[in-house]
Image (cartoon, rainbow, N blue to C red; front, side, top):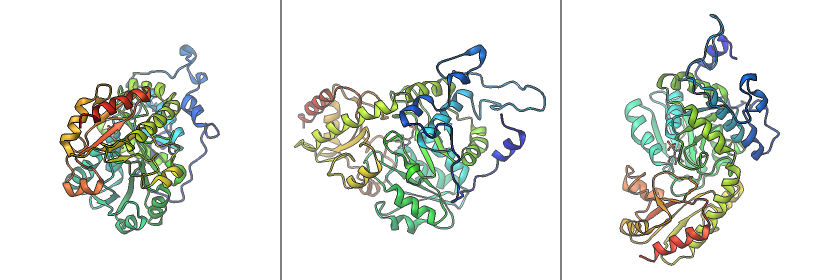
Length: 415
Ligand SMILES: Cc1ncc(COP(=O)(O)O)c(C=O)c1O
């Protein structure tokens, strides 16, 4: 239960403190698989009248006052609900952060973060290796409507290139690694050092890897962006997102942005995600091994021009990926010669692989970034980011890998 003073404190704007040390958390000593099952909820936490083995699903959007002077917390659904509160604790434990604040989607979580911490005239430093809706927020929505500018570094593999773009108005350095859709891998520790030398926080989008594969906070990241919609939920039944970081930041977002827009993660979606997270470590192991097999098959296929997967020795940042990731993850992309026409031919020929937007699902999905997610980038920007007209993104699912490979082989034979 929070006091009035605490609630007042939480409405203060967050200021990055380079000397901030995360306080110890109850699940700190446990392994990742244990946290995925236990963080945030013990059956003994449940009320006497509603004893439960699983976390409760509480759809209530308001919470009764005990008496006139005591504000309940949560107080109203626009800021927090009890089931989302459990999910936030579990996500924070998995990422190794102090606290989390959920949002209606990953894109919303990014929007909420930027809207909360940046002011007109400020800037944010990132690269072109970011997801499509993130690029749109950075390239047009925030600059045109809020006067917040984004700088896309010239060479994301070179820490000096990042250093050059940061100035006294930089509020955030934003890295997406491995990136969607080209699987570019950024050196988290090196970029954390650069950002911190300027007294600026580093945010890492950990959506494609998840904390089961990569722990950016252990490498120096201050803030984590998550789309829950992808691997965390794992089968396209939930739309959700989160920011993990210092509690002073997550509560600034909650009380100064979420409170007004009400873009929360609904209780049922939060509850579903708590169930799905229990199997995240298991699922990611299978995504890793299936994707490795599929990537190796495609890399040896004569009709394939290029394969992007951090688990392949031919990946330009293979050494770095082996150091900072525990497996290559469940997403990859490949280029077929012949541009959009060839991509269309292959994708129309799939029988098992499903053509759909999103990734991280238990079923294998393909998508064409040039026409679907990165259509707003200029052609020179797409060239720089490696978004070839023939690029096909593949989110490798949990099927028998031989069946996925057989479907790919058959579709590629149409070229
Ligand atoms: C890397 C990454 N981060 C965040 C998001 C946004 O997530 P959502 O679709 O939940 O808004 C996406 C969506 O594609 C993504 O690919």
